[in-house]
Amino acid sequence: MTPPRGDAGQAFPIYIMVVAGLLFLALAYLAVGQAAANRNGAQTAADAAALAAAQDTRDQLAGKWVDVVRDPAKWLDILNGIADGLAPSCPRAYDLAAQNDASVTGCTEDGLDFRVEVRTDKSVGDSVIPGTESVRSRAEALAVIDPLCTVEPPGGDPTDGVLPELTCKDNRNWTPDPDDPTSLPEPQDLFRVHLAD
Image (cartoon, rainbow, N blue to C red; front, side):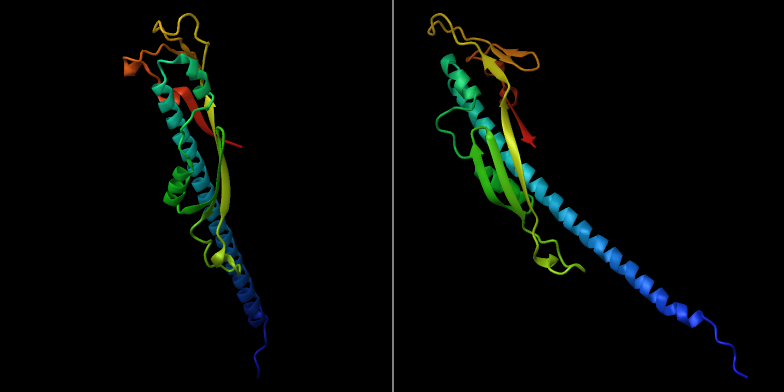
């Protein structure tokens, strides 16, 4: 006598297909996660590179201001980012991008604005999605230098040695004394560096 046939054998192929589908979905989510991590790395590198370039120029401007601290007629130009002899700051962007496993593909300095574009050195990697093994993420960032201080044009005799007061944001004022370096503001007191949208 033959035993009755049930439906148990028919469920096994369906089970295999469901497991295979779930495995494929898991691998696809992993690929998406890899791509997102690579993209985040690119944005981090672009942000760091743009900020580094802007901070380099900020420090140069602050140094130029210290150089002419006895000549207040030149202060306003420097506080507005106008100074002769500033070195290019994009090399700092290249350094910071390299430290974040990325390469700079574009760097522009436009006054007090610094736009940097980068590409990651590492690809997204192998995944179930074809072609990702050679894809590198790209990102760009814009860093801006904002002057924090203003100065009234000097009055009276410019040779009398009396320097005007720097009026800065956050109710911070400076009365510089060229003979006392501790009375001089730091670069971050004169300028603010930040990322722009």
